[in-house]
Image (cartoon, rainbow, N blue to C red; front, side, top):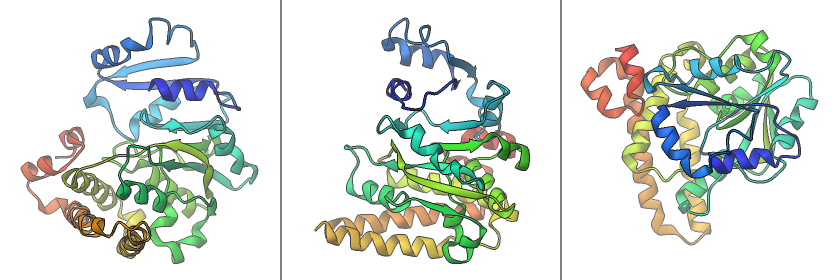
Length: 299
């Protein structure tokens, strides 16, 4: 969090206000104690709102964060606390695509940290290549579900997009960004992937955690058939697998192919179960999910 805030301080395009929504105030105070007593007091533009873990929702919490912003805000940028600006031009490059009037959302390139393994490096490069692109509904027939992709790890929204399309879905286990992005494309808007807007953000998940994450992802898709019913993710999954094999061979790391395939099996298992969550027992769902609080509301 400290690196994120200090990185935002150094941007060529200044940030006018930071709304920090935190779950569990005591944990936050302990985690930020090393920042220095004046870290937040000397940054009057930071507004901190503490909520309970039970109150957090991927869509609703982000909607509420917007209410703390000034009425004349023209661009909202959503970030997660573990994303760090890679340089001083993140904001500048993130809002640059808004020069095209039809672009309503932009999202940044996520780059793996130096500590990330080669499998995670590939995943970041696959999902976030070095070439920018602007997508519209016309991309769906050729790109499938990839056309709807957007990530609130670091994404910018014109204020008008919320006037046009409403807010993020108020109750969602995950994937609020992609659900909203799909509605924008279907409504005639465009979404820009800004490859020159870069953040450092990666994970080294275990296979079981990959299963849990993909379970939640599939639940979000099963809950929103109006967005995902007629669009398949399987073709994208096969493309991901084939490119990974070539990537590891190119880097002379063929020994990673089998572990990668095993990881893909865990991912697919999570996805398969998530799409069929209504047939699972509440006890099994709670064992699989990453988002326990969601099910307190759902089950």
